[in-house]
Image 1 (spheres, helix red, strand yellow):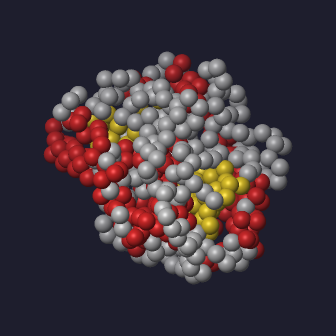
Image 2 (image 1 turned 120 degrees about the horizontal axis):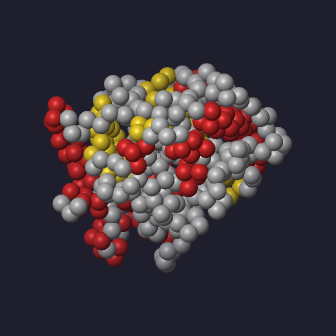
Image 3 (image 1 turned 60 degrees about the vertical axis):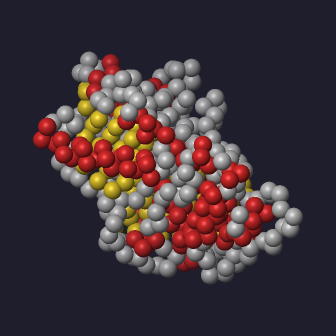
Length: 494
């Protein structure tokens, strides 16, 4: 084992005869604030073109930073996505295939390293989190400080971070700020959801200036049916999004008052798409093409827009690159892979699998970011439906590995009035897609994203697209080989 590995093992509590000295963070290292909303779609921010929704603070952040138009999560499910965000590993490599909580009980392999641990041990950062956690085990996703507040009240969350920010003004810090908005409430005993299902409790969010919306004000995206039920739920969802924005204004104010705003990288993303059927838990574009706004500590690229196709596996490598310890992290991971005592032959490849897009933050036209990958295995434990996808500038191929099974629904999406009204309407349609096609999927789904951005026309069986289909199949296979994906065997053993 190399020097970096020995240092790391000593600091993480593993056996080592001599405890190394704690690394002191460099005073010029940027602070990192990573904000992860819960089920926030790309269409639902003013800076992304939605004129109906009130998001002045995030719009202002976009004017000071870079807005990504083709950023993607790698799995449209809360826990699975968050594990990728914090490890730089795809789910088949970090082991977190589905939800962490309750009886679902998924968690990462205990040999995995995560972003807060890297930052603490390799760069001397003080790490803290507040809000939704939803990953396990704690020793893998360890933060030095955990602040407490109502996850549906981002103002209370922001205020709970004041001492953390103030006490670390002279030492670099990493703050992981995760709201429970705009996630739906969960159904009880499989009953239909209550009319107010997005946590919008009248008078229940002290300090938050709520913004209310009418059904006439909302914009119904083409992948949702334009029904009264859909509009009512979108109005509730908009209110929840506006609440996030209001709380982030408070957080940004605290960073400015502490004098650390200019030396802080701020990243705003969502774990997955909007909590409606056709988005969350699918790997259709509304489920995985998500908001991503990044303010550089250097002040570069203010107000710029990039179409670089990044994904959430790239976040950890990029942050480590920004603070100058990506080479050390890669060496550490390689040492662990080479350690015969770890028996890597029977586990997924644990090297960092994402790519650093640090150069994109300086040059939004940086080349080489023209395709990305996504997958899905579980959401809830009852929702086994493995999928793989490759997305290029023009095409997208989804491989439904268990295509013989009907597509399973998340409990909250099934109980939503939007889905139930569509199901009972007798039309057989859910926006531009038939309910039959949504439930019983083809083995391969090929879409021309330029001409069919909402993925309603499957071209996989059209002979005119045979070459495109084969090329994209080969891309998925090569990706699986590179990342040691166990589902690769399904090409031969269906």
